[in-house]
Length: 178
Image 1 (cartoon, rainbow, N blue to C red):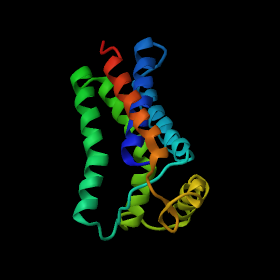
Image 2 (spheres, helix red, strand yellow):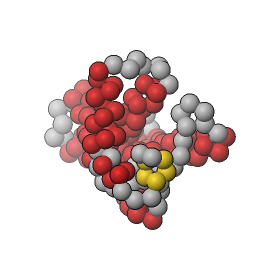
Image 3 (tube, rainbow, N blue to C red):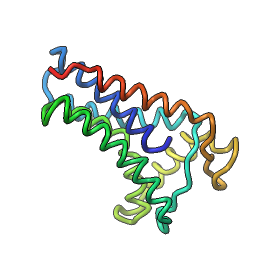
Image 4 (cartoon, rainbow, N blue to C red):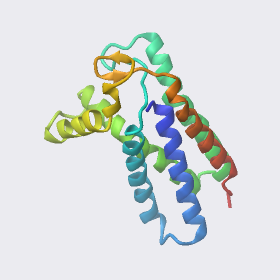
């Protein structure tokens, strides 16, 4: 799944957390914020198990075009959702819950990038995570048109990610701001 799909899923998780907070069922944000991050992480892995493609991006030698596409994919959508959440909730709990959902949904890929860029060390955990993330969850990369030897290219089957984005946008606009 590309970044805007994961961010969109994180917004859906965050909107769910806002609904829980507004219902009064949550004991406190001290519990709800980490739970929202954790559910966001789980959503990342669940969505990665659904067949999807990627665009080419070299983390070691990205081209200007690759950097522009990544900036639009990741930062463009985060800024869009962030501005809407800030407008609706100000700096209140709703904004932080939406941000927690997005952070959780992006965290596995952020971790992978930090290992690739040598910001974090390669160790047994990072190797196990990479195997789980790419060999197990991305089982569908073994079928379909290739971007690289082990990555599936974006295609018409990725339209579902646009649907997730639309649902996230709709839910974020519709959630009460109380």
